[in-house]
Image: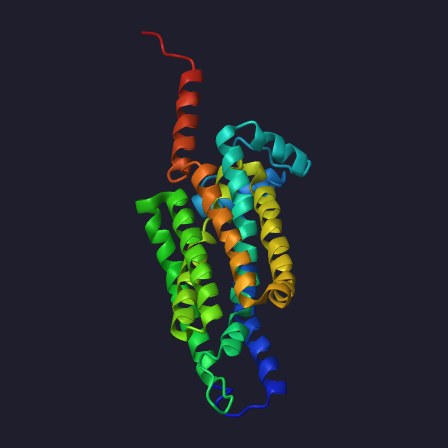
Length: 303
């Protein structure tokens, strides 16, 4: 809307950046009054606060805990890796999560991040006078579709599971990138838009469970470490993709660079198929196993 009104570009991009800070500010305000969970406080040795939080949230005073805080060492990455590596399921799921985070991070920033520029260069939505309002509308429509995909992804878990969701996501992203590469080469403008829609739909699926899986399989004490360590792969790959795609585009052209990015989606698909065990229902299985183990270890009543 601001572009159509003729607002100067020097002001427009600044307003655009400022608007992006509004959701972050809203989240920050909500975060100020967000209570800590008793489990989080327990793992930090803050027993007094944990008991108070438990009373407020669950009406449980946790009388078995002392009324004083205890100094506990913070979880170390080395200890976290030892625990994860000791269990084959946790190990495979964690490795997949790292690969998935890296692939989806680079997949997005190497192509989708530059999507508006790619559409303008390809002439999609650009008028004869050079007006790019149409391009902005096309880009907005693609991201609206991607947002819908993000809401649909959790609904699909009960049908296809985490493994199936990742395979569908990376598979669709791969198809979108390959078709998009040929569409860019032969200047098929409509196909470029369709391929971008397929890519973004798939991307929002394959990006939906990488962090979830890493946190899911980690023991409670290491969940924060698992999440933080896994997120490094997202940001490192995103940084790499954002800077390397223009270099590949200059060296190989849009066709070669886009095909190269599709390799990342293919790697993500193969890792989901051959590395990731099905994780749907994993938490319930772990809890049931823990209850059964506790029951077996408890002293049996005399007959």
